[in-house]
Image (cartoon, rainbow, N blue to C red; front, side, top):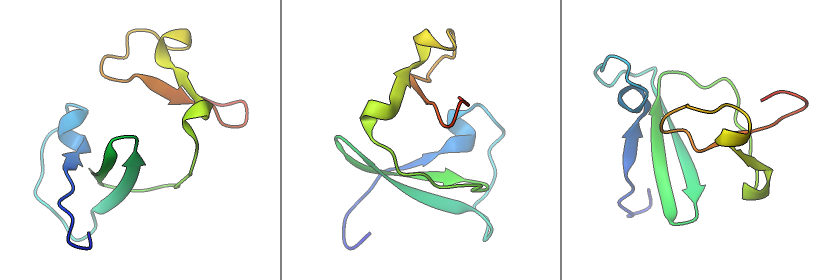
Length: 79
């Protein structure tokens, strides 16, 4: 992106799903994080929401034992 090298995370691999080749219908989400930026490679995007880190809830408080997941986002009485 604009001359920067940004790591791409294959979310299928991250979630333990079967790998697949890059497809024209795939989507890439640029995420700004405290250490810089990453790109999430996903099959489909339903909704994009911008939020602050103060809105994040540690996963142990809500859904223990989710492996690599550290935080969840509560939105309008939903998690």
